[in-house]
Image (cartoon, rainbow over all chains, first blue to last red; front, side, top):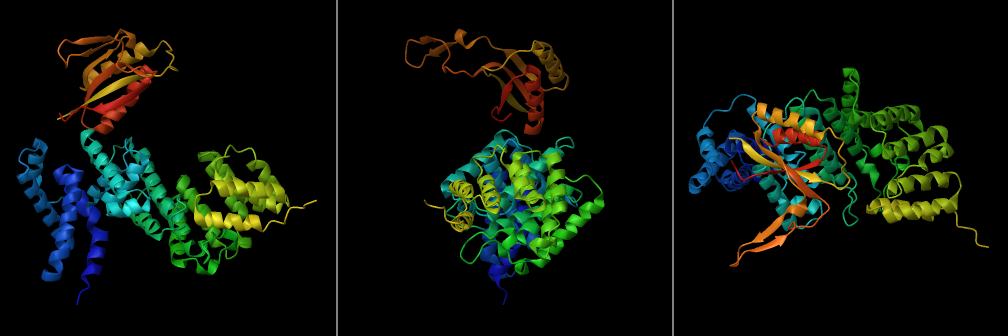
Amino acid sequence: MTDFGEVLTRVHREEWARVVATLARRFGDLDVAEEMAAEAFATAVQRWPLDGVPPSPRAWLITTANRKGIDRLRREVKREDKHKEALMLADTPEPVGAIDDDRLRLVFTCCHPALAMEVRVALTLRMVGGLTVAEIARAFLVQETAMSRRITRAKEKIRAARIPYRVPSHEDLPARVTGVLAVLYLIFNEGYLASDPGKEAVRADLTAEAIRLTRLVGDLLPGDGEVAGLLALMLLTEARRPARVSAGGELVSLGEQDRGVWDRDLIAEGHALVRARLAAGQAPGRYQILAAINAVHTDARDIRDTDWSQVVALYDQLVGLDPSPIVWLNRAIALAELDGPQVALAQVDPLPLDGYHAFHATRADLLRRLGRSQEARAAYDRAIALASNSAETAYLTRRRDQLPAPDFP
Amino acid sequence: MAQQYLISVLNDSTDSDDGNEMAAIGEFNAKLKAEGHWVFANGLTAPSTATVIDGRHGEPVFTDGPFLESKEYVIGLWIIEAEDLDVALRLAAQGSKACNRRLELRPFHGA
C-alpha cells in the first residue's frame, strides 16, 4: 500500500513553488496563487488516497488549482479587468521552460528590495518554500497572527505598488541576485545559529530549507558563480553541524570538534563546487571566497593541519571586496594561528565592534592565550552578556570559568 | 495600463542646495516627458504658507499652518506613470539624484 502521507510530503516539497509560480503568472496575483495552491494540495490529501496518485502530480495540482482559481473569479464578478484577462489566458498551453522561469520570477518578487528584509524572508519561505505561516512564525518566534499580517501586508504592497512578476532587467540583475542570496543566507544563519536564546541552538529545518532553496536558485541561474558559492558555503557549514553542539548543549569550537562526524558527502559536494568555481577563472565574489575558506577548514583532518596561510590569503581577498570590521575580525582570528595571539590582538583591539559578542569572544580567547586572565575574564563577561544563542553562552561561560582563579591578596 | 505613482520630495533640515538642482531637475523632467512617464510635477512653497481646512461640521474652520509640524516635510512632488515598481524605482532614483533629496514613492490606487 502506498504511504500517501509520504508521497504528499514529497510532492509538496517538489511542486509547491511550481504550482504557486504558475498560478501567479496566470492570475497576476500572488494572493490568489497561494490560496489556490493550498486548496489544490488540500484536495489532493482527500482525493489521492481514494483515487490513487495521478500519473503527473504536478499537472494534476496545477489543473486543480487553476480550476479553483477560475471558479473563485467567477464568484467574484465584480473584479478588475486584469482578472478577466487572466481568465482568458488560463487555457493557453504552457510554453516549454515557462515553469522554471515562473519559479525564478517568484523568487525575485518575494526578495524585492522594496520589501523589508524580514518580509522578504517570510514571503520566500511561504511562497517558494511552501512552509505554513504557523511554521514560519514558530521559526522566528513571532505570533502566528503577526506573521500572517506581515505576509498579507506584503502581498498588498506587491499588488498596489506593482512589484513586477518577472526576472529583473539586465542592468538590475546583479544587485537583485545579491539581494536574493542575502535572504537565503539569512534563513540559513537563522537555522545555523538561532538568534533567540529560547530556541534550539541549531535548527536543521531552516538550514535544510535554505539549502534546498539555494539549490533551486542555482538550478534556475546556472551561470551565477555567487549562487554556487553560497551553496558551497552552506554545504560546508552544514557538514560540520553534527559536531557543532555537544551533548550538553554547548557550542564546540572548530578546533575542538570531532571531525570524524562531519558529513563527508556534503563536504565532497561543497569541495566540488569550490573547485568548479576556481576552474571557471572568474574573480570570485564574497560567497565564493567564504566557501573557499570553509573548503580549507574542511580539508584538514585536524585543526593543526589547517593551511592557515591560505585562510589568511583568502581573507585578504575578502577584505579587498568588503573591508568591514567583521571581516577584519575574522581575518585576525586566522592570523592568530599564523602569527600568534599578540599580533592578532593588536589588529582586533581597534575594531569598532563593541556591541558585537564575537568581538569580545575573540578578544577573550586571545587574552586567555596570552595569559592575561583578568582581562580575558572581563571580555568573556562582555561576550556572554551580548551573546543570544544558548549554546554559545554555555561555551563562553565554561571557557571563562576555566580561567585560572584571580589572585586574592 | 500604466500605474501612477506619487513621488514626494522630502526636505531634511540637513539638506543644502549646491545650486545645480534646478538644471538637473529640468533635465530629468525632460527625460520623463520624452519617455512617456510624465504626469505632473511642481515644487511647494514653505509649510508656513499652508492652511488647514475643516468643513465637516457646519461653518468651515480655517487654521493657519501645516497639519503636521515636523522638521521633515514635503517640498515638491512628481506624479509619474510607469509599467511597474522596478521602472518607478529606477526613475525615482534618478529624480533623487537630480533634486539632491530623499524621495518617497507611493502608488495611487489601481490605474
